[in-house]
Image (tube, rainbow, N blue to C red; front, side, top):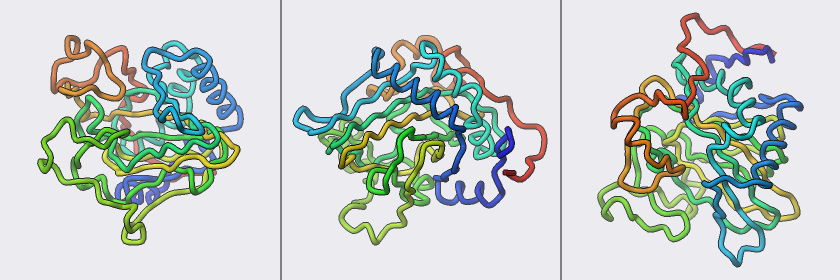
Length: 281
């Protein structure tokens, strides 16, 4: 790839149609090593938003941490200097690109805990349509442990957000929003996208795209790193529920409906003003 990592028109059309796209070999081996060091630093020194997302009786362990870019230079380096934000900008049709947050997700060998089918945006404190999330593993990911996406689901609007562990509808009355489809009851009835992945690969998806992952059977870890990007129309949307991550006190600094112009959300790329060339190798 060139340093600018250009996508083809077909790839961008696939993303707009499906709400998810895989980009093979986005990160160099040095960048993968940088991400891996960042993840291990997070695990060695968890932040205030660190959480265990699996049950006590799980034979493995699923942990997450958020918003570490200001403390861990490896995370800041990838957020600011890698080609991930360039890909996000193209998928957002040349919008400016602002970092929303970084997210480390680690499922240890034998983890039984699944991540249920869900959309991300209802759990966030932002509204708008120009957004992209990036998810990249530093370990090989088998098909049975990868992220899977319901193709085209980002065009359905908000569906009922439920708590992950007990599936309760705590923020909206039952019946007030349509439910996430019961995909696991008949997977063959749905257009499901998912890819085996190698270190260096990355998937990009819209914050309203329905997605999930199973546990991690066997003897191998699944360490992954995610960056969430905001485009021009994304604004602050304070919630009455605890968001993921929770930006405590942000409602006192950014008004509801205002752009996310704050030092917590650095501008990574200004809006594009030139035409986009085809992706090159």
